[in-house]
Length: 526
Ligand code: CA
Image (cartoon, rainbow, N blue to C red; front, side, top):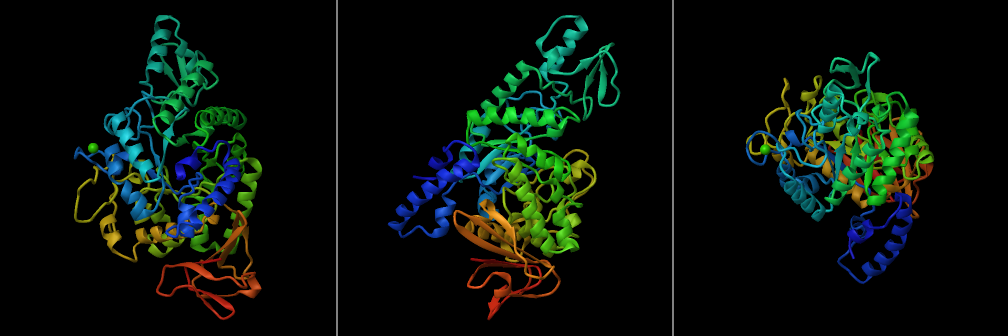
């Protein structure tokens, strides 16, 4: 009996939870006669879909063959880094399908691997090696548009030129009237919708043949072992029409889950909180939590001054809202991604703030996403290529380090590489690892129902998370001073300090009637 058996349980994540409870009873009986299995190991074997994801821009990650371009074999080579040195157990691969652009968000073939990145055999190896390590792999699926070099589009344009008919004409939005912004001219009489740029013609997602193609593409990758998809540009499917976008996502969710019930879907709705929450009505598992991310989001605000108690109450309200909208609704917190300035910048390149920000968003309900390089404090902002710089594996050994993406003008500076940070107990990388180790020991944090706890101290973020009858207590001190929290006055009487994290020299401790939390530290009580 292992995690694989559990992953086959069909239905939504909440339905799986019920089945998991029965499985846990069965497992605990088994474990009671197996003295080598501890309480923590019991949970690490429970593959119920909750994951800590790592977003990888393959081109800039690890170059396995020395041509300067990162590749799938490079990702495979670094799976032990991801699972052991960092502690993540999910990967989001940015687009890997053939594409004329360096970022590959404009696809010419939905059923292959870009030759710069490798082959379908390399993909099979990556999936096999990832699954051996209990790492799930989700793929970027770009359905709003294709490349203008995709055969669907070139055939459609050819047919329009010659006056012939082609079924792919209706895959796009051609018109003889010029609608203006967001359209480009092709042939001497047609315009086509292209919201991002002329090289990315928008697809007509109402076309039934196209929907059948999309269902086939999803099945193709799921059959090759993909564990789900990251859905690009969901608000652009039907520009300005969230209702139609949610309908389309609901259809897609049904198609994907019918083929692979435990597949995981996370959508990009780069919008305000109310809009992101509405999209959970589609049944898609997760949407990236943009209102909490980036320089202007709530994580940066909590770290850079707005305090802790509002963090806990805000996150409780947010999780309640999304769970009211979606039957599954798994929050997807992140600090930054490939479209935003790296978090080291808005956290003032201050390792203490970077460590505390990591503790805040990783020790929270849901599936968080770590952008590659964030765990070592990589920098980069402004033009897109600067947000996607080569992973800094080492300061002294260039093995595997890729060339910068075209157009990059910045360099990662002022930090140690992976090699140096692995050897440094106080590094940001080792703090990430400690956080994820603590999280694995306390499965209620990701899975549970969260409630803010009032300690009476504005700089302290405190909450409980309850799952399957067990409750864990999480307290972060975001203030500049040590804080003494009354155990009896904060509903913490009788609890023990089970884990702690500190960015400084002193660790959290219980002293008599008080929990003593040094500045920028975290305590876990049970
Ligand atoms: Ca290469």
